[in-house]
Image 1 (cartoon, rainbow, N blue to C red):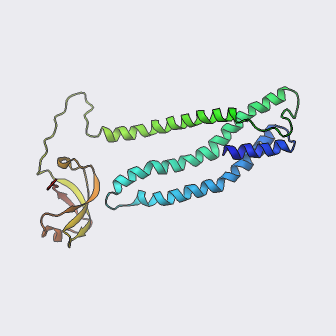
Image 2 (tube, rainbow, N blue to C red):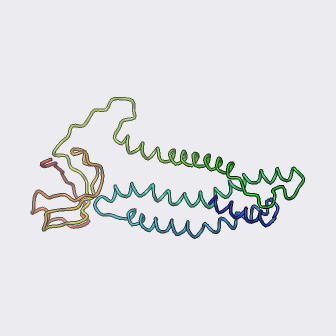
Image 3 (cartoon, one colour):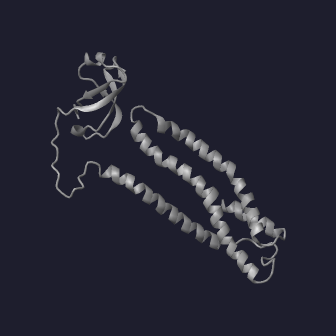
Length: 229
């Protein structure tokens, strides 16, 4: 975006236009419009690949959704930063040059053919990138904390550890039944006795006759055992 903005302003300065706010606004409109189509195409292509992952319900979909969610958020916020925040910040930065040129008493304080310096602009962009990264880290921290501290007691008192039990039952929903392979796909809650978080996964059924009695969409209680490692 900065290359387009500086290029549009430099072309006007080379034509002898004064460095004033009207020239700045015209350059920003020209440079920003040139970035709309490539930015829109990039965002559309990436979102087209991520949205199916976000709405999927197959085996392992919960894990893939957690991976895709930050990428979708980034593709939504990145165009806002590029199309709105950067041009506005660049306008504020260049307004200082306009004010300095007007203080000299000349309407053409920038000589014919002068180029816009990238030093101040680069420093501003560095500060903006650091601020944007810090903001993203602060926003993402609670989500990671929630996942990492799940099951921990925050009362300040030691909590008793639950002993694994092979008879522990877990609520689940049948998503798919493969009678030929004796496999059933379940969307289940946390299975504490094997340390498995909530997800959708296919399991081998121990009792082959039982698989004939379940249908897709049934709410069931299951016991999962780790057989053979």
